[in-house]
Structures are given as C-alpha cells and as structure tokens.
Image (cartoon, rainbow, N blue to C red):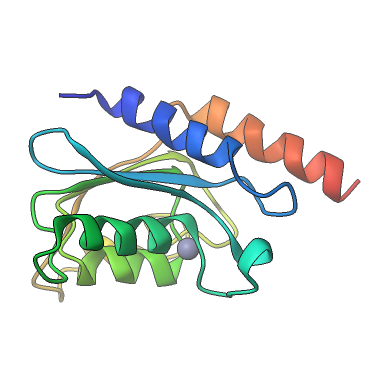
Length: 151
Ligand SMILES: [Zn+2]
C-alpha cells in the first residue's frame, strides 16, 4: 500500500501537470487495495468550469474507472491543499473513506480551517482525515505560483 506521503507526492505530480494558468492543486484517488483509480489537477481556467477543482475531477474519473455507480467506498483521496466546501461536500457524498491533504488553507478550507464539513457529526458518513502531510512542500508549490501570478 502506498503511504500517505506517497499519495501526496502523486498529487503533487498531478498538480505539476496543471495548465500554467491554473492554481496548481492536484488530487489522486486509490481504492482499498492501493490501486490508483484517478488523478487530476485543478482545471478551472483551462476548462472555464467553476467546479473543475482537482478533487471533483478525480472523483468523477475514479467513479468512471470503478464503473459501478457513484459510491467510492473504501477509497482514499489525497490532495495537495485542504479542500473547499464544495469538494469537502463531494467527498462526503461520494462516500470516500479517507482524505489525506497537504497544506492547510486558512482562507477557504472546509476540513478544519474555516469549517469541518467532512467530520460534522450530523452526517451519517464521515471520512477519516489526515491533514498536513508534506505540508511545507505543498505550500511552497502554491506560494511559488502566487508569487509569479500575483506579485
Ligand atoms: Zn474545491
């Protein structure tokens, strides 16, 4: 089985392949056996789609690969940045078992920073969470992007 660090490294590789106009966030989904189902990068600018966050694209592709409906039970999603409210909601709806993320996102994060959507006790499905994996590497990737694009 890949370690959480392996998964974040795969997500970083996905982020590196993002369109240069897009904020480089990457995500990877594996199944319970460790097989990679999908990886994706944020593609909002490239696609003109406001919902084209890395997590959403990776979940869609993973469900296509599994080919057995929309439930992604037993899967782990790793992403380089703390998910937003939309993506945190999608993780819950997809029944993702575990979420691993890299950098914390104090401005929009919905897995502990501003909200904690995935661990809300009112929900009947709550993914396990590990945040801050390879945090400084993930944060540096984003810092470099914003330094270049928004000096
Ligand atoms: Zn998102």
